[in-house]
Length: 208
Image 1 (cartoon, rainbow, N blue to C red):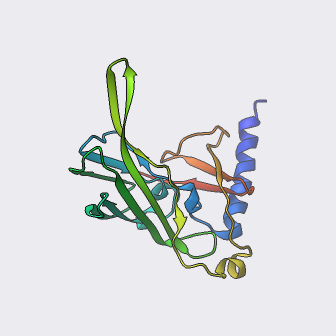
Image 2: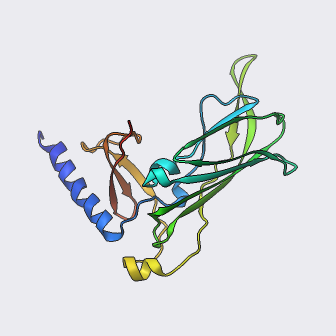
Image 3: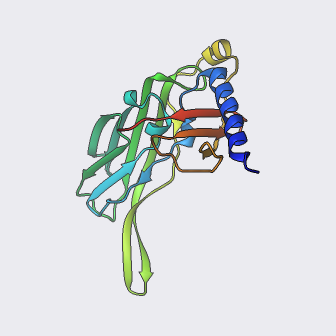
């Protein structure tokens, strides 16, 4: 069908508008956020990515408070970043030890499902793991435990009263472009975030 992409776009546009009008939600659930070890991490250097900065709008007001500690509870790195999804630093923690990471994402202008401003915390750990790529040859990298975010704000009834529904545990199912193809989030394109409760959020992030 030649008109299939246009029909898909029209359907997603209507669903996206309905989803936004329903609650003006401008962030995915905290439990849809998890950290990623980025390329460039080494034995004495870490480079992590937090997807919450891209999934929470307006991203210019995203504040991330990072804290890294060693097994003794000593602070290895501490940093507060604004509108920055990445954190990078050097350290002298032995690769035989475990690194612990905590990051709090807040955005006073972004609305979470209960009507409150966004406040999501991720607490995870990193260990050095080596993989044998060919017999006798190993490659190592810092690996996360895989924890997801939890809501760190104060629960309230604002969502039920003002928005018309109570807290949910909706999950992000997929992200598609205007043709209906599933894609990875990239700036400067119209995207539709589809959730398991049937809601769809339309987003367009401009980056220069």
